[in-house]
Structure formats: C-alpha cells, structure tokens
Image (cartoon, rainbow, N blue to C red; front, side):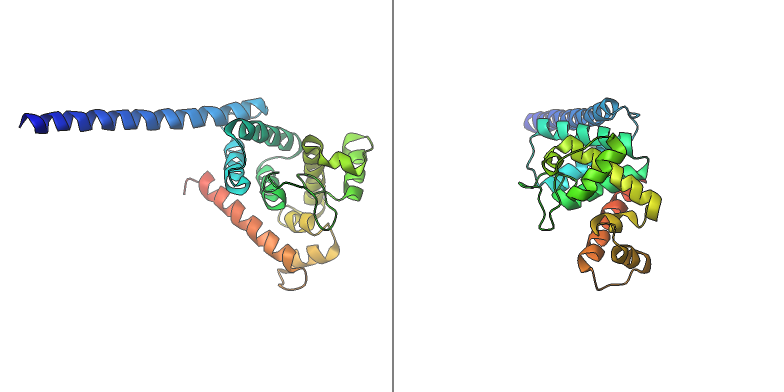
Amino acid sequence: MKLKIILKIIIGVLAFILLFLLWALLSTEKASVGAEAEAAGLPTSDTFPAFVGALMDDCGGGRYSDAMKRVKVGQIVRVLGERLEGNNRHAYAAILCLETRMGSVSKHVSTAGALGIAQIMPATGAAEAERCLGGKIVPSDLMDNELSLHLGACHYAALIEQHGPEIAPFAYNGGGNAEAVKLAKMLVPGGAKETVAYAATHAVIMARYLRDKNGK
C-alpha cells in the first residue's frame, strides 16, 4: 500500500517536472522569436521571424547551429522587413528556401550563372544595385549575403509591381522572361517545367504559412 502511494508521488513529481520543462522550452522559443522581431524593428507579435525560423529548420537540413540560425534569421528578417511588406516577406523567404535552402548549400552558383543566397544573375544584380542602392557592383559581390538579400528583395519588389504578387515567384525563377510570366498566367504545364514545379512548391510553402497563421 505504501509502495503504491510512493509510486504515485514519484509519478506526480516527474509529471510536474516534465510540464515545467515543456513550459520553459516554449517560453524560450517565444522569447527568441520576439527578440528576432525586435532586432528587425518589427512588432513582437509579427509571425515573420517564426516563419523564417521554420524555413531554416526545414530547408537548411540542420546545417546551422542554434547561434548561427539566430544570426541568419535575424539578418533575413531585418533585410526583408526593410524591402518588402506583409505576406510578400513570407513569399520571398520561401523563394530563398527554394533557391539555396536558406543559404545552406555549399556554393551559391547555379548552372545558369546566378549567384549568392538570393540567386541573382550578374546583369540583374548590377541593374538593381544602381536602382536600389545607387552604386556599382561586380559579380563576386553577389556572394555577400547581406548584399544579395537586399538586391534580391528589391528585385522581387519590382516584379510584384510589374506582374503582381501571384506571378512574381514565376517571374523570379524564370528570370522575368515572357514565357515564365505566360505560364504563370495561364497555368499551362509543359515548356518551362522547372518554373511550373518551382511555383507549385512555393505555393505549398505559402499554404502552410497561411494554415499556421490561421491556427489550423
């Protein structure tokens, strides 16, 4: 009888400890997200830092330490917060996931010649550097994450203005060419299959964000 009472007490204590540790873990995660948002000059209630953090976990494949993850999340949140608004930030962060797995691939150079975490073509980078930053760059500058993020987000903002937010992901992946935009508008499979698959995957990522945002 006494043994049963002792076991119940032990189980109760262990359950309390487990609940306390779970609460502490959730509190730490919430504080971390809030700190990232505050560092980026955004309201602490903003969901964007948490979204970027989730992409770092899902797309980065565990390649970053917790400390490096916080640095990279903070950088992406800050730069995209300066260049884009609302859900367009989430849409572009999803593009970073598709382009370079949030910068986790070893070499940010595509077979087409796109460079950096944002996978910008040298000609596009040079044009956006003059338009957005008022300066000149050389192709190797695009390997700098900070610069690549600024120019990529600036370019994406221009694509949104030109084609609208629904078409912009197609245009970004397709280099802004008319065929990519035509495919996006008509949703016709074939032709630039990579662009179609790219936009479909992007839509899945965004659907998950909207689901999480709505608490579903």
